Amino acid sequence: MSADPAPGPGPGAAARPVVGAAALIATPEALRWMQRLVLLVFALALVRDLLPPNGFSGTVLLFDYEFGLVRRGLLGELANLYWGKTVTPGEVFAVSAAMSLLGLSALLVWLGRSLLASRETVLLALIFVTSFGFAAVVGTTGYMDMVLIALTLGAAATDPNRASGLVARVVVTVVGV
Image (cartoon, rainbow, N blue to C red; front, side, top):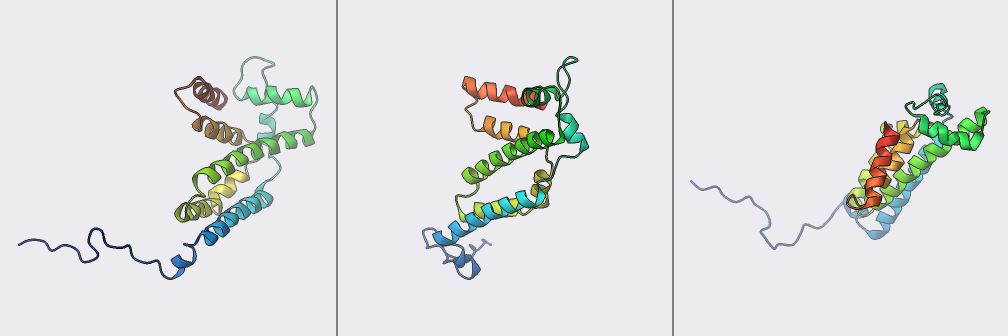
C-alpha cells in the first residue's frame, strides 16, 4: 500500500495569497510603520525604565587600580579621568547613564541592522522590545553589562580573521573578567 501525497499545491504552484490581518502588515508602508513602532517602544522603554544607579552599581564605578589589579577596576580607572579625586552622586549618575546609553545604542544599531529588514523580523524585534527582559536590561543603569553588550556587539561586527577583530575580542574578554 503506497502513501498518497499530501493534498495541496504541487511543485511550481503559486504561493497562497496573504489574507486577513497578515495582508494588512504585508505592505511596504505597513513595514515602515512597524519599524517606527519598534523605535517608539524602544524610546518609551528608555524613558520609563532608565533609573538612577543603585548603591552597588554606583560603587562599582569607584573601583580602580589604586591598590593593585582588581576585578572591574578598568571602568573605575577610566572614570577617574572624568571626575578626579572627588566624586559627586551626579557624576556617578552621569557616567552610569552614559554606560547604559552606550549599551542601549549598540543594541538599537544591532536591532536596526538585523531585525528591521522584513515583516517577520520586525515582529520579532517588537516582541523583544516589549518583553520584560528588555525592560530589565534598560533598568540596570550603571552595571557593566551595558558596556559589555556594546563591546560584544562591536566585536561581533568585526572580522575575526583580522587584527582589529582579534583586538576587539580580547578587549571584551579583559573587560568582562
